[in-house]
Image 1 (spheres, rainbow, N blue to C red):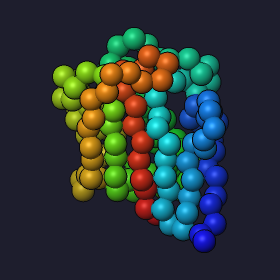
Image 2 (image 1 turned 45 degrees about the horizontal axis):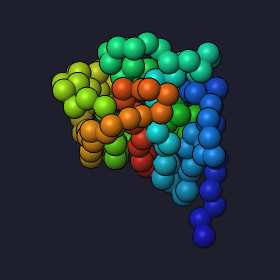
Image 3 (image 1 turned 60 degrees about the vertical axis):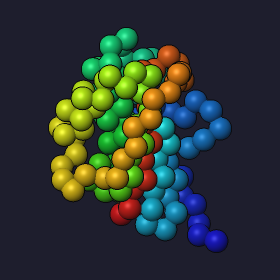
Image 4 (image 1 turned 30 degrees about the horizontal axis):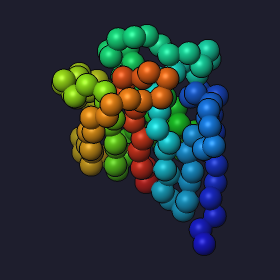
Length: 127
């Protein structure tokens, strides 16, 4: 069995349950779902989708960097939104954080997310 290495950073929100920010197994890193919590205050950054999606990408970036990679190393990105009409904004912000070739991606509409978040993302990264 491949050893599991826990990835943790103070630059992203601390885990608020029975999970790790990320787990590295071999050269693959599985990044847990990130919601728009400010890592310093552990509070939501705001009620608006624009500020929330930026914070989620900032949190993903911090975890990827703590694992020795970057957002460019993401091969699969899952995006969960409570309102799929925000998809254009996701594309706009994602284009500011990640360049081509873009990762494989899924966008899923959900009824509810932790702490009333409007968006959550998890990722698989290969180093």
